[in-house]
Image 1 (cartoon, rainbow, N blue to C red):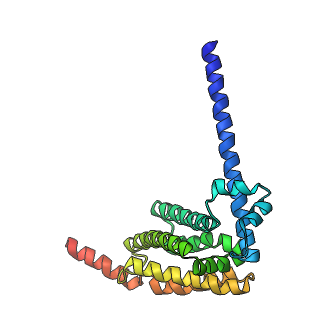
Image 2: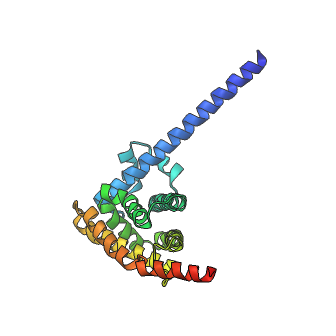
Image 3: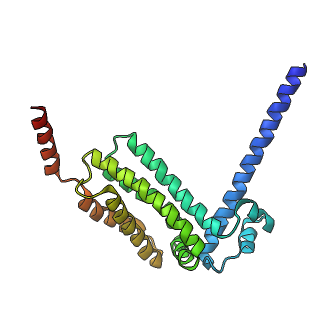
Length: 228
């Protein structure tokens, strides 16, 4: 009976802890979403912590339990995007999906938030330009993004789907700059044209980085010659 009682107490404690973790995650997400909406609507600089907590319907002190400063919202956004990229790189290395489709899926996943909130691109850019602290943190996250994308490009090179006469990191950087530029110009309009713009950019980018069919033939012949 005593053992059963202890077991029940442990189960209840675990259930309470689980509810707390879930509640905490929900509160953090509510603050995060409220902040992104306000950044897009009013601008990053014009949005205060009090504005965010009012929109999220929580006490002002609650904000600082999850984000030390308003700037950390932007870093959380960048980390969220980084997490998506990590997942796509991991999945791509374990699948036979053509690299062109992988890269297309990558861009579409990474632009989900801007499509939902077009002004967020402008808000992020302004925050980067106006805050040295944000800029430094974002540059570090961008370095990690570039390294991950470079890893994905190298995977495509190893599969003979992406040209190998250029370093993977170089291709990754041009890819990121082109997609960011597309997002930036689209954000000025904020209309329904993002998917079309992305598809156009992807087609042009792919035509520049795709491995030429003749390169495949040369590679196969070289391998056959080496075996002979």
